[in-house]
Image (cartoon, rainbow, N blue to C red; front, side):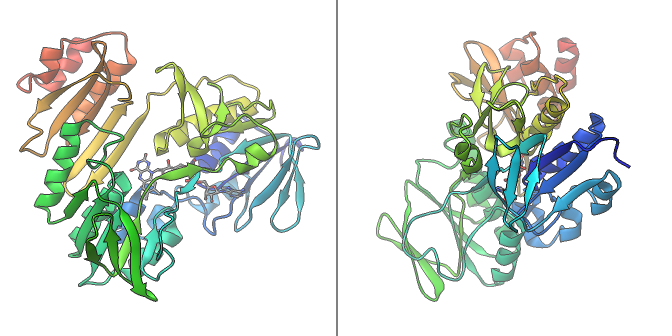
Length: 412
Ligand SMILES: Cc1cc2nc3c(=O)[nH]c(=O)nc-3n(C[C@H](O)[C@H](O)[C@H](O)COP(=O)(O)OP(=O)(O)OC[C@H]3O[C@@H](n4cnc5c(N)ncnc54)[C@H](O)[C@@H]3O)c2cc1C
């Protein structure tokens, strides 16, 4: 039996919504909790969709963040296949796609992000896919042919992870990246060159400074025309050119929005009854002293814990260090911190010919981020280093003959 009739409504049904609903109970929210999700499934892990799931190494059942029974036991109600169409701030209610209206005392926006669509001829042909949810991944799985040829448009993490996966199952892959190098927005030149090298070693063709101008075919995709006039044969095209935050509901009710729903360090929006977390939220980051919108699972989880506390009128500041990971072939990349604005990169290990190294990003002499490839101990070190006031000599961090554990001890 619930102790009161207060109603919390969470819009969205992925990493942020799943965590927020559970965290609300942990924060002793004693009223009702309703999660309204336009997905047909209970919340599932999205990262494997561009990793093990496509190759069949992970089943759909293994993707679920929690069994449905956990939500049931905690009296968390899910409305699947349902969208929130409108929010009424004055009456504190939401209108659902099934025509129902539901009152709320506290509302959470966990609406995430959607894939950026490419506006070129041929995107509607059979065999052209985006990758954001389980339905997309399932469609790609069905479209994969053993002797297939794939073109991936976009050399970001999702594009490269998918390329690695398709190579693993023997498909010819060509990656088109419009910028001068893969991962240009997110890494140093040397790290881009590293990924370019490894993918080439694994048999992927990468074309940089080239963008797709048209996808051609007759009902089914047959090829991709590039900006240099070249046509690449393909029977599968995957477009991975970034995402756009789902902020329309927030904009519709006049909340502050700027590349994400603007929230403070307590995940509160400009309406005291509404919080936002995950990919849709642009938060004030206390570590980096500016507003940022992150697209990562750790952010969705940690920020949702803060949002849940705020909904229960408790203050839990969100100040977790951003981190991210990417798996490609035998490479496990773990990224600590944000490298934006770095002015120097120092390497530990051989980025040019090995498959294991650390790129330390410095800004005005301090470490602000690190890309750790197959370096789990250094990843722990990096997180500690960036979060603490302490510093270690840069020469020691670059010196691979000094054990990472020794450096960790020096930091303690
Ligand atoms: C293929 C892939 C690989 C990834 N790999 C990694 C990785 O390795 N590491 C990492 O940290 N992150 C990774 N990410 C990113 C990570 O999955 C996202 O950061 C995370 O899913 C964000 O969770 P979210 O709940 O904020 O938003 P989303 O996952 O975008 O979920 C929001 C949900 O809300 C729904 N929704 C929106 N509006 C409404 C409405 N009005 N009514 C009802 N429902 C609505 C959306 O349809 C969606 O289902 C990956 C993402 C993808 C797609």
